Amino acid sequence: MKNACQSCKAGVDAWNERCGGCGFTIVLEPDEKIRARYLRGPSLGALMWTQGWTFGSRLYVWFLISLIPVAGFVALFACLLFGRRWSWKYGGWTDWEEFRSRMRLLDAIALLWILGLFVGWLLLRKGS
Ligand SMILES: [Zn+2]
Image 1 (spheres, rainbow, N blue to C red):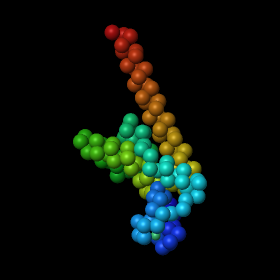
Image 2: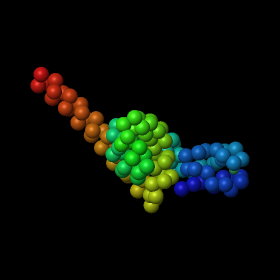
Image 3: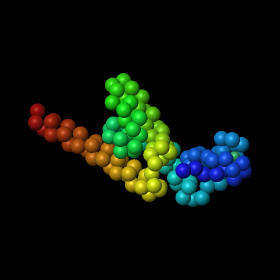
């Protein structure tokens, strides 16, 4: 989904506030502003479980890349920084709500994963 530049009418990606064609600063509606900020944010889910996250985000090419040992690190950092934007652009989501709730779910699983690791670590410590 793109916004239109108010000056030259070119399509501008939803997370940009400046037109790449003419340099015009685009006036965003409040909810568009929230979206732009969200899309520019890092994706913690990609950091925690890159493979599951890329799959859930419908970034299937990155999913395949993340399966390759060393390239997986590239996928991790690329998706940590740009994952949300790419997922929004290429994921084929019906609307913002669908995209947003999927991102929420993936981030929640990432948190559970960290929590699980932490609990496992505590149990291991207790056992020894
Ligand atoms: Zn423009």
